[in-house]
Amino acid sequence: MIFRKRNRPFQKVDENSMVLVLSGNEKEILTLNDTAFSIWENCDGKNLEEIASYIIELYNLNKDKYFETVIADCDEITSYLLENGLIKSE
Image (tube, rainbow, N blue to C red; front, top):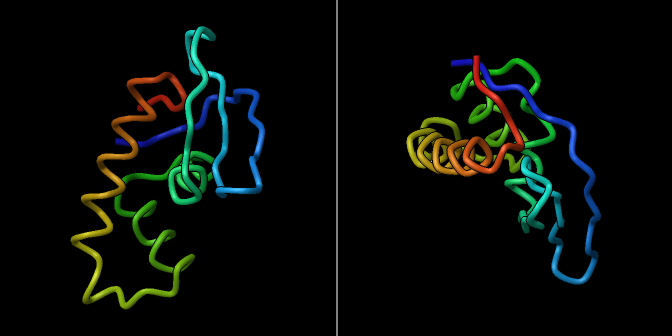
C-alpha cells in the first residue's frame, strides 16, 4: 500500500512541538506530535516500510534494533491519518 498526503491547512504550535491540522472533513482540528507530522509531511508515494526507514533515519536510530517497533508505530499513525482524511492510500 502506498500513502499520499492530502494537503490540509496546519499551524505549528512551538510550546509543545504540536501541529494543529484541519481534518479531512474540515469539521475538526487534529493535534499531531512531531513524529506524526513528519510522517504526514512525507507521505509522498511511500509504503509503510519506506516511511519507517525515513523515521529511523530522522531520529538516527539503529535499524536492526528498532525497525519492528518503528514500523508498528508508523502503521498506527498512518491508520490514524487515513481515518481522519489527512492521507490516502493506493
